[in-house]
Length: 100
Image 1: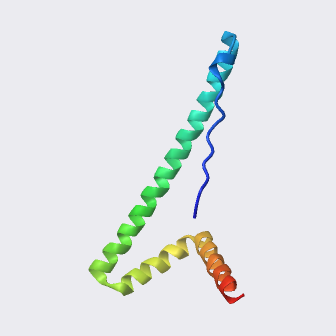
Image 2 (image 1 turned 60 degrees about the vertical axis):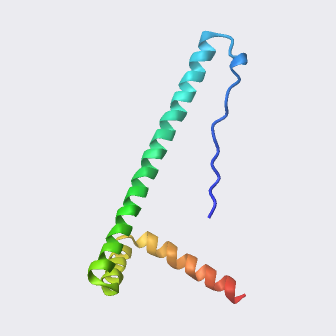
Image 3 (image 1 turned 45 degrees about the horizontal axis):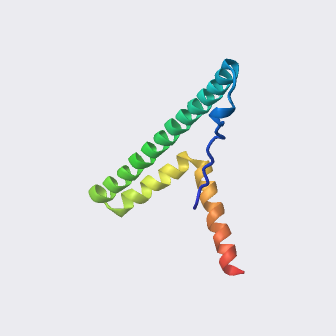
């Protein structure tokens, strides 16, 4: 899966003629930076959660075997029904594409 990332539109500094224009542009860029910090924090949290989940699955496998992994995954999907539904929809869509 590919994700396209679009940056903010940059203002040509040569076209800023007044202090008011400069302040307006600074406020706009501050808002953009704050939004980007928020996005980075969200992605960092999601990445950490995914890493911890994978570590739990791997530990289960090493300590208790495949049955424990299966139980852990079932529990995870039970706690995340939207994820389960999304994955099941993807699997069904892939199955239909292969069938036709």
